Image (cartoon, rainbow over all chains, first blue to last red; front, side):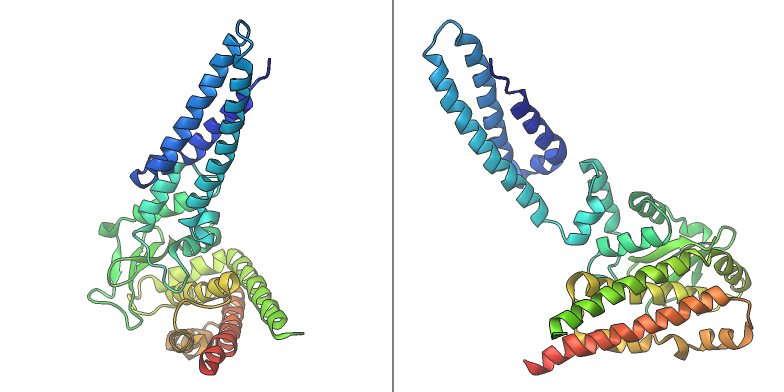
Length: 191
Length: 137
């Protein structure tokens, strides 16, 4: 008896990688099509059991299997394409190998940053976390948790001539430099 | 070499120099800490360490764009003006520090010199490939 567990495994993998992406309302169509294909594979599995008693089921099963495989191939490349289209090259690099929960958290934390002279915030985070020997997510978390109440603001009022505000914690060497609007340009430790 | 080959060569060179700059940076942590310790009580609007941090961020940002895309999203004239504005050896606090610090910070000085060289190459790249393109349109 043929074994289609590989096909079902492929669907499970797509759900694992793109789960949160597929849950977004704008992607409901892709999610529904994936469910329909999963349903077809379940029917195919049922037919395999029935084929033992009814030889005519075999042909229907073959047709349904071909249909499901073609649809799955097409849909999985559409899902990947839609997912990638939303991301810049730096974002793709930054999020590679991350779970959707981590990506969501990173995207949320990145809203606190300014791209400054970078193409986008992701490109800035890639460079900064590398320069400062941090995992990018840890870097974003630490910058977000910077405690301004313990820091000295320089200048005390307004911003410097080049349009930045610097925060320094004297006891630890931790610092954060931001735009007048409060968007982080850089963060780190003098250690 | 054809023009596009020269352009790719220059982009790769900028990428390599940025990598080298970051390697210098990782190797100068002791000097950076020392510099921070001497400057932290000053409350000066401009300190050498903070200029180093900010200017290297700005220059790396432009280089990162050129390496990835071959151009900057900022208008070429705007990027050129900014790169002139952050001319390292025209900044008072850095010049004074250079003059007064003797041979105490060789690694940071090496970093500044490479950074300024990268800044000049970035300027030249934008002038040659973005500004020229703009004026030819």
